[in-house]
Image (cartoon, rainbow, N blue to C red; front, top):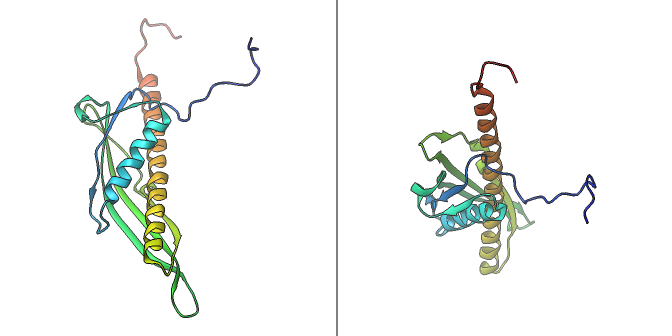
Length: 177
């Protein structure tokens, strides 16, 4: 038997998105020269929403309460540290994403563009394949971090929308509650 008030509760891995029960996540367009970056970003977004378990991810935007469309605006790499003979030891990879979130009725939810940009360092190697693999892993981590931010921003925005709708709702009856 469970005791009441013991301080323990079942907690989901994410908060709700207000009245949103389903979301469609389109594969982003890719404005970079990095082939496949759009698929890594789309996969990270879908995984984040599935991991949270508070909404269904659907393919058809017409069936979704919320639709996300985006494009990978930038993917920039630069040497961030070099050795004494000017060979790169580490690179820094920066991912920039443009994202639009629209409710079923067409209203757009505001998103902070600054939250859709992130950088991470990865180790260079004399083996080109190792450097490529490290870069891809860095890109996956960046996409995952940004996907988490997108979810949290939407959660906060939709909770505020829900709270403002409830406070603006007219009272039934004429008496204060």
